[in-house]
Amino acid sequence: MSTPLTSDLSARKGYHHGNLRDALIEAARQLLTERGAQGFTLVDAARRAGVSAAAPYRHFRDKDALLAEVALGGFKDFAARQTGALKGHSDPIAAFRAMGLAYLAFAREEPGAYAAMFMGGGAGPSPEKIGETGFEALVRALKPLVGDPPPQGVDPVRLACQVWALSHGVALLSASGQLEKGFGVNPQELLIEGVERLVRGALSGAGKAPSAD
Image (cartoon, rainbow, N blue to C red; front, side):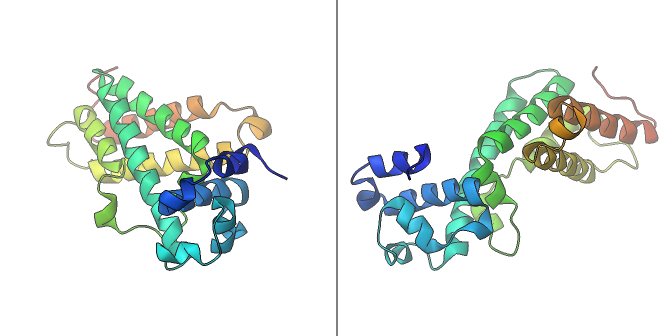
């Protein structure tokens, strides 16, 4: 039985022959969305792309190598969205809010890529291939809020890690329906409120208030 995703790939007759690598990456992204990283094999990806079981080995040594490419594309797209959200606002707090909403939107709209980005186990792309991950944009967004140099006791990188961890947790809980269905909590509002409390708490502890409101 075909689904909109499988029909989309199979409808592009000849696509997988001229762009086998891209077709396999797209197939893996779709399978990640449907089944998770452990729910499919390289053979499944080949079948989804409409090629033979041996065809993927022309481009990928194993499933981990294919998943790493899905993750690489995810990181690049994610970084572009985060950078775009940061550039779209002159007020630092408004920019921070926009980045949080962009984070949740990416996790919601690209669940396959998002899962690949954070699957761990050594299967991800190498840091030098990734380049910017979106984390750099987060650190840049913090600078107008904490000051440059930052006050004593405030480490922008550590604070950015805390914000990222909170964002990731909210994204995962939202994806599983735990927040909305379990507690009636809006994930966007929860993230914005939580991030602002993190930043304000860090600056208050250092005796500095945020530079914008």
